[in-house]
Image 1 (cartoon, rainbow, N blue to C red):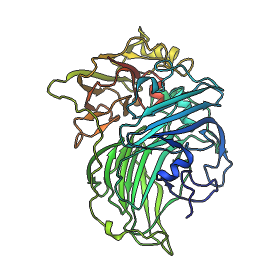
Image 2: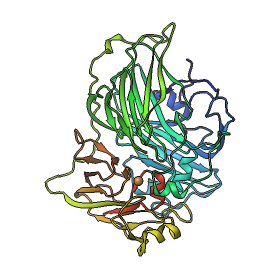
Image 3: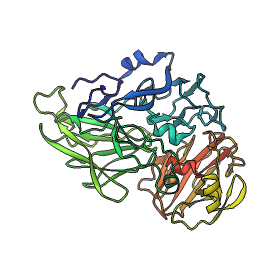
Image 4: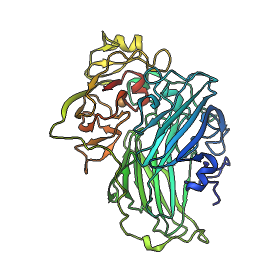
Length: 486
Ligand SMILES: [Cu+2]
């Protein structure tokens, strides 16, 4: 299948979704302007109409440069990225670079790290990409609506020597809540979504399309870069007939290990995983990639469809079964566990919770009143922040939840005292998840209902950083805070 590099698959209503083939440097240079180790992109946020559901009318979305998802940005590790955001939306916006350890002023949180980018205005982001891996960008203004309408894209930072594979492809997983004309419903901040599981879509998407299948070639080795860009859906992926290697989580390498047969790869909103998958079946075969819905029922996302007929590339049979080499570690400072200061973070509130009163922007209120008057349903250590109301920014967060010393190590002990899962995201840093196998470095960690975890990190990036749930309705309904470093 002929696929235009660097763009998402054609606008046709084809049932077969092709790959987003990730370009090597020469192709990227044709789109991003590269000079002296700096790659520059322009990103215009604007309404766009695209075919999402085959056989249905085009869907009106918000996208970057007319695309959904937005264009794939790509730089080499150690290089500098410049991205000029132009806002042609009917409301303010910004760009946040999820997972990138960058200077605070480039973090894209309006009201906290920069003023909002008004309609018709532009903002220049520029920073070094120190860590290789799979990252993404999205607005941090009215995130639930802006991401829920389609504003996001991938940022790939290439290792100096990427592992040899036949194809390097991205799977942006997300969902949309569509009406029967395939239009995005306008019920953002629905009370039920705010206080329960968030805005779950009714149409799960692969690379911005409702997909029947993803085409693979017998014998090829694929590097799959998975992103969960959904507002609230937690993907639990299973690969029938395949045992992919897990290579990286949230951009950071892990010791390669095979997913056990039937083992689910769990990706909460905002999370990424890099896999290496050997396409070992024969031409004509189809194997399902499945997800489970919040009720625990499995459904088919799409099939891995082995091409019938002549093989297009000549995949190297040499891969078959060989363990891939580990990706090189990123230059993240190891936290000093022996000397780390311990901090407790309690996630509270929501439907079926035990929280009865909390502080909303510093004022003590009952949870019922907080919800009715402020649409606040969640708290962190008894505090909720309503910085997203009435606009979409983060002004008025008040005092930081934690004030940390620059360069010191911390262990954040997180207790989920709610009846709901929460993918908790810290900006500007990567932390080690101490109780997960292999203690992976991540920027987002998924807590199960009543679950707990411990996160270790070095507070080596000065500034005011967001700490929030990446179920965007939970964030909007109070589940966010700032962490001050330095
Ligand atoms: Cu949450």
